[in-house]
Amino acid sequence: MRGRIELPERLVPIFEGQALFRGAYGGRGSAKTRSFAKMAAVQGLRCAQAGESGVIVCGREFQNSLDESSMAEVKAAIESEPWLAEGYECGEKYIRTNDGRIDFAFVGLRRNIESVKSTARIRLLWVDEAEPVSETAWSKAIPTVREEGAEIWVTWNPERRASATNQRFRINPPEQSKFTEMNWRDNPWFPSVLDAIRREDEVKRSEQYPHIWEGDYATAHAGAYYAKLLSDAQREGRIGKITKDPLLAVRAYCDLGGTGKASDAFAMWIAQFVGREIRVLDYYEAVGQPLGVHIDWLRERGWGKAQIFLPHDGGTFDRVYDVSFESAFSAAGFAAQVIPNQGRGAARIRIEAARRMLPAVWFNESTTADGRDALGWYHERKSEDVRDVGLGPEHDWASHGADAFGLMCVAYETPAGRPVKLKYPEKMGFV
Image 1 (tube, helix red, strand yellow):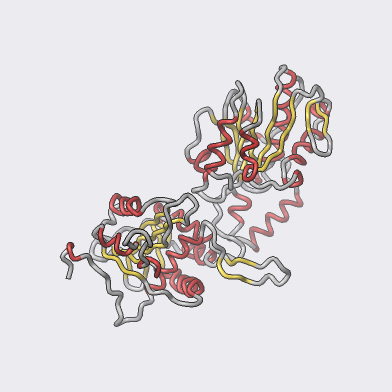
Image 2: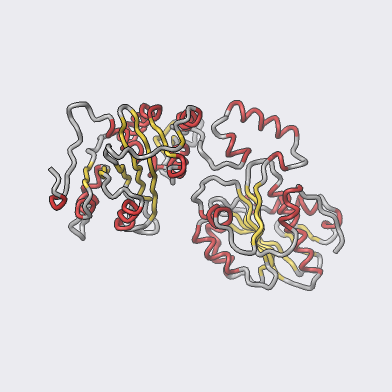
């Protein structure tokens, strides 16, 4: 096979030599998708000319039709190179090499992961827009690539530091892997029309600009409640190294989760009230874990004497076991208190309390990043009609950390002279 492919300089070493995993992550306009689509076509032609038959699988987490797939990108990449176009037959719903050895398949992993598992002789699995792909989907899809010399490619725009894709391929990349970050300035063909949009976003949507164009994790969403306040905290130096005051009480504010795989996350902020300031020392979040895991984390991090504050359902007893979160924390030796339900409009009360308190909040940078990501993303749910009516906060991955933070701010505003009374376990001997 003879032909010349032009790639952004940053991608050249990614495709050199042998590797099982290759990929790139970053912001908009970097030419990631187009470059990987072109190289997928090269890979297909290379396999066919080597006498290998099989399938190039192009996947996305969400795909209801071919219009939502990578097919258009692959076709455009093939058509842009005459020597590639000579080797392929492209129809309305198919792409295959002229000799019929290699077919392209376009699948949505969310609904069709089983079809990927049953696909024979996968020569390449390329997952584009891979940020939302779940750990379950990865654990099922990766073992399907079994042919000698087959590879897995991943391209995505990072959104959450804790996402399964980011953890697998950026934070803890596997052996035999080559990954790189790519942003708009790494694209030698970055068009002027797109640059005009980029510059406008930099001025008018500054909170979202780093994620959209510079490949940073998402810290703001359209309609986000706290994005500007967090930007103010960064600018004012209130996100940095914050240490514990040994003379003041340590407080843990929680949002409760369950123990099943589909349960809500359990989130917890660790803070101290210092005068009129809230100094946030740590953040914790876990999904599907029993209470003992949360308690172990508190002790391992040095928060074993923290006062535990729970939302109103923290005092609700399980229908099978005579236990509540409040009683369980107390049994483990913690001082625990349930914050009364704020009643109708409780979510709005927490949001407004957090907005009022955020200008007085200091964050320990190294231990609260995931929590700050959640706060920056927490946003208003909008109606889909033309009125664009707000429907209250969106219940998604960010809501658990945001709810626990709002609970902390509500508790801080307890009127003077009416301090929160903690329920201490008798065995600790507190008075």
